[in-house]
Length: 378
Ligand code: PMP
Ligand code: GLN
Image 1 (spheres, rainbow, N blue to C red):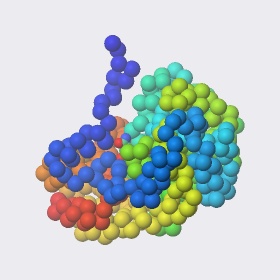
Image 2: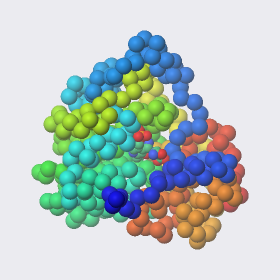
Image 3: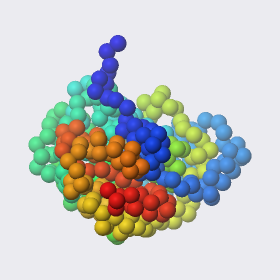
């Protein structure tokens, strides 16, 4: 058969985690915590299982969870999404993203993405026959040239995918960036897919600027989120997306035949856990402590960095250490120094020369201390 994705191999997250396991290396590559999911949340999921939440959830998701999500948008962003028609619970953000793309992108439609880009966007565009149009962001600040974006928008542009806080760079978009996007898409039919899975992980008192806070943007946007990122249990694969009703209708036409609905007891447990908003509002401080610990400990190393502004990732520039290609260097660090990271070039095939690796700091303090001892020896 002829492959629909001839240039796609195995995702770097699988490759680096497998290598970390093989060489018994500290795994700061794939983004997941190495400490437990909260006990109370685990108990609430167990309660849900013991109280009958074991059959199919409604297609759009458990109603208590959709109400909790709607309440969060109201409290945090002062905006409303109707739980019946504008919110759908998904199998992680990944399924939301794939389903949004497949519900809208037709062969030869163009989709703008910003590179380096999280790795699930481009294959989803291309397996649906779309064309990826890349806009380059560059180290160290990864800022957007809005004139370039304007020049790449055309009548063929179906969708623009944005991601703030940004994986892998750890940068965030300003209010001005969001206003630029709102201005450029006004009076078009472009759909915006706003990947906001790290919305609750922003540092130094900065603010997350959700697409839902900008009325003209909100009207054309899907917002996706991931409870795995927010509640420290990436293995549960529960997320959601929100959009105005006309867009959500099209989404659900695909979603109902793609998964129909997702894990019910986990949804009910998460709904009950969200009754206390501190469970997600406390994340900024929780991860700021980890980022600061990690960066203080590696300050004397030969790696250079700009502190991450959001997400639980820190990119480190190793250009003072070696000229090696980042994939080779990341593999060598895993094998010889027993520390695994993610080379940035895999998110950015147009820019193979950056000497940058991404490290995940959603780890116990003990792991971060061990990791920084290694990084200071390199
Ligand atoms: N988008 C970004 C930017 C991510 O980093 C991730 C990984 N969590 C996802 C989407 C996918 O989220 P999930 O694990 O909920 O599928
Ligand atoms: N989002 C995680 C990361 O960026 C990985 C998720 C996955 O393994 N697909 O590391």
